[in-house]
Length: 321
Image (tube, rainbow, N blue to C red; front, side, top):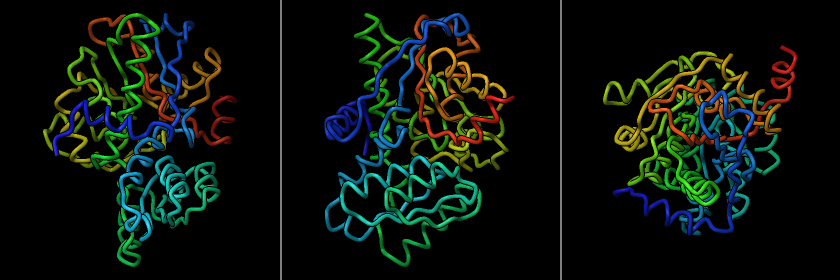
């Protein structure tokens, strides 16, 4: 199956009414630091406060009733778990989800509130993937992949498709650069598809020590990493998906890593100057934009704010620092 921009356009048509068309927001006070007109795609205002709702809703909507009746299974550090739990609830399906033992409480609580069953498993994406496979062997349920699947990728790509259209309408000109946070790679692969045929330059943002995408692009094959400690809990895969890498490597303009200090400062700058609260994973992309050193000095820079599910305790610690 060849994925193209039209695959994302089709996904957007199918998702109409099932997800929020989140706003594109300007944050003028941060333009100086970005050295550009800064545009923000507020996916923190999406259902379950994260872009993941898009891929999960599309994935379940494309399943037959018979398949959904067998139950839905997935593995996630938090936002995809919430998204699948929400989609399963919408379609009346049972959901069993493997999550890390150190998943933020706010994400765990919301998964439970949405009626999904949680099995805690280790600290890494590999740990929870193995747990999900064990659940599948017992139940014969359907696995909804968090990033390495065509439906997930094109679903996530609808965020960028909307963003590009919104900026063109509101600014009267196109984005020149887009910074995307990378965990497993579904969001950036979808962004690459949505921008096919355009002049938008796409850049990845990963925490230091969690840069599987950057290393994989450099190596020309998927490189597994042992995720280092980071406050960006949603960006800690052991490896990016094969399909995600294949798409991204063809279109990406550059890769960046960010420190926890940069992420924290970007998160607080957004909160104070734009009154927008995001989780650290979303702030990672903003941290790259706020360096103000993207190649070619783009005039209009877009950042996808991937989610807003920040642990209250962590937020308190960042505010007190």
